[in-house]
Length: 214
Image 1 (spheres, rainbow, N blue to C red):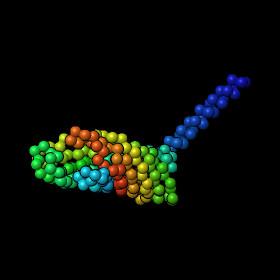
Image 2: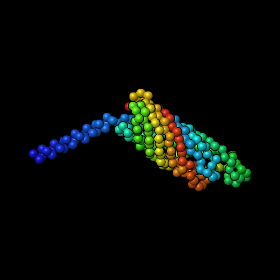
Image 3: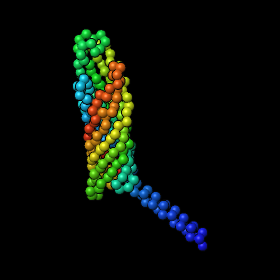
């Protein structure tokens, strides 16, 4: 009798676990999307303050899954256009330059991210969104002086990310979303002219785009 009771308990536990797993699978909703983003990543105050661009338009593609109504995860890749700024380098800074020299600096941001996402439904169509996660990012710098040379080696770094926004379902499958994001890009490093520097401040970006939910 004791073995029968134990067996029944084990079978019951397995059925309950299977039912819970099936329920979770029913609630899971994968989604994919693409956003336009405008990132504002200014140079730090000091010698590089005006040497780099301040804004970077680009795109973000992502795939995610809602594990349940209020929690999900998202994996994405981010790409920016190459932007440029021109700065004046003091005399003697570059080899072969006896006078102040104009230098064109081009910067391109590429990276990826993994975020934990929270959803707060306000009605059947409208959701508030919050996200926290980490990304890997490289701000590739190319410098073109009129004379001499500035050797630059850009490095890929991990950065923290936080975002808030909202989404609106146009149909059961398609929706729109907009987010305001922060990234800790003050951690990015580049080796410029033989020395490691952190040239940028943290980034604020705005993204808007469309997604499909399955």
